[in-house]
Length: 228
Image (tube, rainbow, N blue to C red; front, side, top):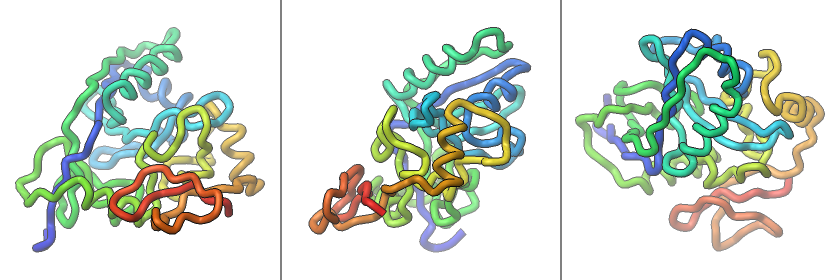
């Protein structure tokens, strides 16, 4: 812990709670990361894609005592993820529930919580309020944007964005060695053939590159989809 340790309460977070003996195999067939790499004290970052390989949802996967949690976007977005997971449930022996609004905290400069797998500079995440000084959300948002890390549907457009646009493989969201999952074929093809022509970049919103598509922003910086 350092003198600059602090926490930020994140906006619009929800939880998906999955129980049942088939929960790991159920998720393994759906998500972009390898559920076999999920360990106690760690979390996975992963996405659910459309069959066409387009972004639908991103989330952090936590393993509990006989259950698995998905820390996801909240509100209507959590309900949409809940609906889609139930659509794929079929005969899997799993029980799925949703909590639209959940308190999630980003922790910087402290060993409280679980390491954020996207980047060491993003610190840790915790479901418990840390006993540390609080900083406003914009402090975390500025850090995230400077690191070129997308924040769910604020930056990746559901049914439209690809994993390549957000450099999601560099954020440990994709395992190219695991078996098939929904949207795997297009995602792998774009990666191995270098087909991506646009990527999210940190920009000054007052000096946008030509034809850039601005997504999330904080102050005078933002993430924009820019042609490579």
